[in-house]
Image (tube, rainbow over the protein chains, first blue to last red):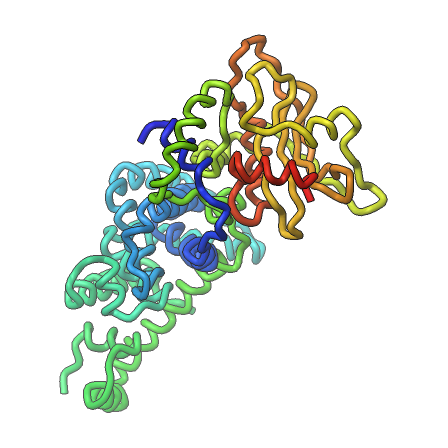
Length: 179
Length: 239
């Protein structure tokens, strides 16, 4: 589409009140989407980038969303697809940061201990294969049923189940017995 | 019965119903190892939620929320019947320096460009500022579509805010901002620093314009006025 075409269409567009439900619904679920994105990426900066790309793709493809179907599943699917597409390269970047974090000395006060424990979860999550991390986040953090999570990940429910169990067992081993 | 790891996880995640759920429940009751596994699963879930849930409690970064604020440009498919208007507008096209589009405002460059200009929101009644005679005259009369590229101050676009008042975003070497109609005056709602004059006759909208437009987008209810609507609003004295 050329620039002039877009300009002309904007000028010609009537001032009809546009249905903004689509945007409003996305806006309402943005905090959750962001939690998922940051969980997938392992840090807020990459997570917010992923959020932005997902929103842009959703807006560009809004005509492909079928009203009456779940917008949140559709949106999570867009996000995980983008993440899988570009996953390998950013995973390498993340490992660098994680190693730096791991080198920090452990302080004595509670706040620092809490911070160290939180980054332990991040580190453990980043050690999971992508598919397992995704399954753990969708079910254990986002609270999706297996059927819905499998649908978002685009796999059979049995596959989702086994990814979840392997991811969960790996996390238990990495994080040890939670107090 | 034998309970597999998959089955125990499914039970812990509330996926089992009916007879299967009761069977796993019964097995857990008599098998301390299964109970321990179940509790480890639940403790892990709590640990993960304690870590990730606060993210969903945080305010969403403005740059992300702005992508979803009304009004994002819709793909307008119904342009049939506007052929004549289209032709007229095509002829005017060269005189349009840059017709702002919400989608352009919402583009990926937004976050970066917002950092370059600080828009100053104007305070309450006592602090209210209004456009001076020169700017007010320009805001009263100038239509976006009729501007020539050489204008020192350009009107970027017009829209209506939540109260239904007409607002106009403007930009020039002396500064830019947004003014909204209040009675017979134009109340300045936001002011930014001016563009750096490039000396070029043909000016592209700069980063500061992006900040002004982003602000306009946040304030606007509905779409930016098109040329026809703008002319009609002008004819009514912007009321």
